Length: 484
Ligand SMILES: [Zn+2]
Image 1 (cartoon, rainbow, N blue to C red):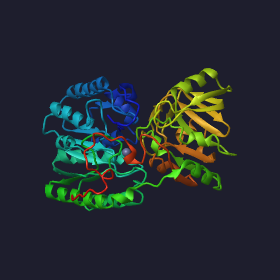
Image 2 (cartoon, protein in one colour):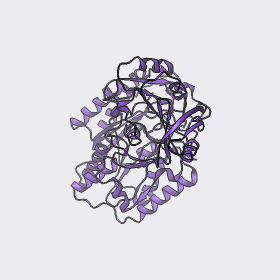
Image 3 (spheres, rainbow, N blue to C red):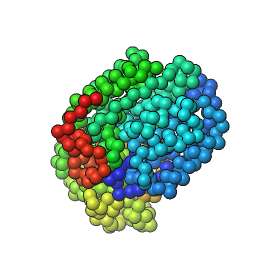
Image 4 (cartoon, rainbow, N blue to C red):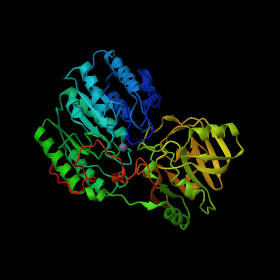
């Protein structure tokens, strides 16, 4: 049960957004796929362990899961777990920053329900996204926690394998997990969190060195995604060693201190949209990628900002540009109009009305689809079909606007390719992502600009209407001191 929350988002999450499957269908969806669950299955099948698949549910980032749907999903999980028979261990793949109405810590809650069923002693190993918000409940209820080591996230499968091996080692008695953690009064921008270089790379290299030297089973650095206004909020470090609680505590403290000491290096550099478009047009060749991180569909934004779109449709383009936009109303109207029709209508700016307004455009309907496509790039749901409902490519001059009924991740160029737009042949491609897009786009992009527009996943954290977050916390309280 995996979803990241953004409590500033104007869009609540529903049961249907998870497209949950249960029992054997879990294996059909994940076996052989590069997901955490695929990694679990790989590790368990190599050890010839019989598997009791319980539930697989993934939803794109948005605001809290509505209460009734949260209860339904967790009840279904709990009922299946209770009916699974006698278990030796439990593997859970979750995000770590999921919220529901009336519940700030869905993962802690799910772990609590699981403990009620399997008892206090059954080993439970949990994988979490690097942007998890670690809580006391999670650490008390899980036997071991294992996080991704990459951002852009491309190691879901390996994280699943690692968790699977950790569980198997625990069952055989070779490993006695000892876990320690540190919570930091710190949230950081996602835009400068890439693990290939920079401050996050240096932290992660330290974690990997400890694991490679056999000093720890799993070291995880959780730079929480920074758009959740909840009390128990902040980045964390979790260390799991084989039987040595003091060493786990030492590693967690040392890495937490290093994270804190490098916090200023995570600040993001944003480029004004008009300047980014001007620089893109002045660039030889393409594509130039404009990352509209404030409207990132992987960070809880609705994907309907017109902050870049309004400038792009006015730009003197002589080659194609591509942009993704969530607008169910426009998608429906354009489907009615049909392929080949020329239509004038307002698009975008309807879900997040605080941060942008609809833009009136005239364009030609080029393509209409059912919005089904399969992620191919290494990352989210690789090899698994996603459905964004009725989807339409509207050509506004040179700008190809892919308008979808429902939100989708934009980090994989396959989003556009599946709809007849190849980013390689575009002058400008707009992605709605702070950093995840780099895995697939850096190899083809001539230049990349993270642009400055307003939105609920903005890098300007002090501009958000915080009310519940525990203060003081950096960077909202820049003078704060911390010792791990
Ligand atoms: Zn993440």
